[in-house]
Amino acid sequence: MKIEIKSAQEWSTPEQARQDCVVTSALYAYLTGTHWATPDWAVMVWEGEEMVSNVHIIERTVLVGGQPVKVGGVGNIATKIEWRKRGYATEALKVAVDFLRDPLGVEFGLMTAIEKLVPRYERTGWRVTAHSLQFEQPGGGKGAFTYPVLILPVIKSDWPLGEIDLRGLPW
Ligand SMILES: CC(C)(COP(=O)(O)OP(=O)(O)OC[C@H]1O[C@@H](n2cnc3c(N)ncnc32)[C@H](O)[C@@H]1OP(=O)(O)O)[C@@H](O)C(=O)NCCC(=O)NCCS
Image 1 (cartoon, helix red, strand yellow):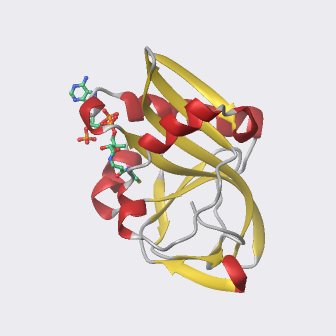
Image 2 (tube, protein in one colour):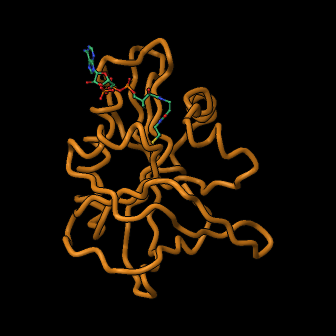
């Protein structure tokens, strides 16, 4: 197994194609029609020539109760079906979280997840802070998710009170 982190600018075309093969996240499947943010970074897990799992990272200053908070958005946690239950997503998320701390130095990690996956993330320090958030869509439109919103303290620990506005496309 090899794990690497690449910025969006570093993705070559074959890697992008492989990346697309792993985009099978549950939320993406449910929320067809949603326009998603382009990730800034991807954690890619390789077995030989095959990308078996990946996690996307988006750097964003969001608003929480009107207050700016620098987050590392974590999204598209996905492992190809035939490679699941071998610890790949767990490893990829660990690498992503280390990266949020250093070099990104964000205040919190932030992700949305379907209810059944929440305990999985709670085991590694993520906690549910809300059940909805707002985001933007092209053409000035607004959208909202009503899913558990999980945060992970990275360099700060007190998450502000109030509505979460991603101030851009969601992840
Ligand atoms: C959710 C998902 C990313 C997990 O990927 P994965 O690579 O199978 O994850 P892991 O192998 O690290 O962990 C999965 C389970 O296998 C278990 N596991 C890990 N290594 C194992 C091993 N060697 N043998 C047996 N089980 C193992 C883990 O304990 C975990 O159990 P849990 O589900 O009860 O918590 C994957 O199922 C997926 O891509 N789903 C569709 C997309 C999705 O829903 N993404 C999440 C969006 S929030």
